Image (cartoon, rainbow, N blue to C red; front, side, top):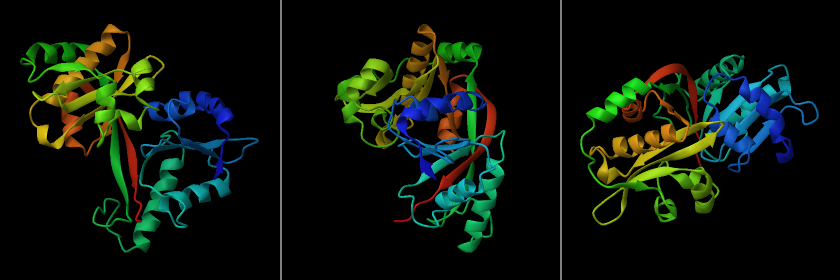
Length: 283
């Protein structure tokens, strides 16, 4: 795969606009909200792209007619030559042929390492897993009902400020999606639940924000799970979106039952499912 010059990222946006799945993380890379990588089949006449977000999400799209590029993508996702240094979660344009190509490469790879039983061989650190990604849409009537039914806030909910940005270190946290705290406070939004000691217990924030849409990222610290904090901060961020004319976006792995159930509790409804490939990396 050939790395695309950053000055040419905007040429990918029209193709991205044609994809009927949530691709805000890829847009964030193309619009330089976050520093990622974009690879192509031909720098002079590009027809296919592999977009990698630094948090470990990736998207492949475009034409599959360039055999060398297809082979390079397969080598990359199976890590047959050791070129990939991190784990990734890969999506493909569902309208094209890439899903079938990835399925075949994953099956061959998993079979070669003795995992003929399927894609979800979590026992092996080298397996490629085939999960399901779910895109949701907010049902505003259901959200209003969820808001009315909500109990009193379990703890104070406040705007996510610079001090909270730097305090959050593990899990799905803003620093993986924004250049720095100043960038986030200028262009992003979020809310946190604070403990009695003033520590962050949970956060909901804009992991991506573009084109009138705001994708929700959420994290609850392990010691504070099961207390309703995730619901409280998500509710606040959705209200913020609606007040500012933004469409709140939620997407998660179907296998992530906590996120899946929370989305539905908030009034989101699943509208699309697609394969989501876990690309392992064994150091």
